[in-house]
Image (cartoon, one colour):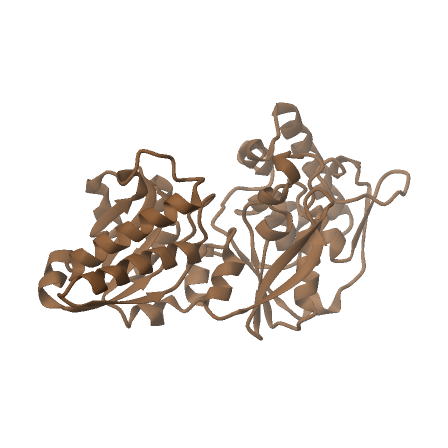
Amino acid sequence: MPATTAAITNAAKSVRTLIAPDKFKGSLTAGEVAEALAAGLRAASVTGSAGEVHCELLPLADGGDGSVDAAVASGFTRRTHTVTGPTGRTVQASIAFDGVTAVVEVANTCGLELVPDGKLEPLDASSRGFGEAVLFALGLNPARIVLALGGSASTDGGMGMLTALGFTFRDAAGRQLHGNGRALAEIRSVARTAVPELADTELIVASDVHNPLLGPQGAPAVFGPQKGAGPKEIAALDKGLERFVAAMAAAGVPDAAALAAHEGSGSAGGLGYACLLLGAAQVSGADYFLDLLDFNTRKDNCDIIITGEGSLDEQTLAGKLPAAVARRSGQRTVIAVAGRSLLPKERWADMDLTRVYTLAEYTDRDSSRDPELSARLLRQIGRDIGTSLL
């Protein structure tokens, strides 16, 4: 079991911490969370006389939104490119690149946060911008591209992405279709122009979503409502995706029908399915990013690990990022910080957590959409953690 905070307080006057949180969704990026906690920890060192807290920051991601930012914070270079947003307006998207690996994410290319004025378009939103960002990344000649799926505004099965990557979809009259959820049911033929760079690049899908493409647990039924889809739209999208799969199979795409039932094919509005069609390997988002950002080496140089996310709950225990961090931390003390926690104290041991701090304990206000308040509370929590350690 990890050493207790009290034991560390008595045994050490100089404490090395690794601050490795996920984002607080809707409020702060992982980098902003880490910076706020570090400011509080350092303040405890200045105001106290018992010792010093050394902080190393490692903002993390699990393959969803924030993946590019986390990679950049760990040393990757940010590259920007103009792509088609989810509803057709152009947006400035970022990818991360270290000379070998490129990280491309759905959230900053065709994500929900990019829908103008928050007006959701469940049938007309497209994943084309994600494909354009992948094409841009291919131009950098990477050995691999990490496809970070999460936060998508579309449910087009990746039709938009595939259009950007050389696929042409036509209706019964031979007219070319734009890739979106509404067009899925109209597909009657599929042709492909090869992109040579794609064949020579390893593709990695980083996601912890396990849903298939179709059916009661599929992309439209489970994730459609958060993208604005009601019962009629969900039924239309599910039927359209069936037609999409049938058209891909008829075009001779290997395993097109079987992959629709594959675990994770329903992630990001069916982008998981399209990525599998391209031959992408599927990995756990949390564990892959811990490896990519060199967590194991970083944690070997610290005494305390501070992790967290916006909400700690049963899904966290099922393998979200804080659980993966705790699992890899060995005998080190692990402290979690969250906006709120639905885990009772007796469940902390399930993740080997010594202590959980929440913003909800420090305020009666809703901090989930208030970055300034969240940062201020995190600085206070950091100070309190630092005081307890010295």
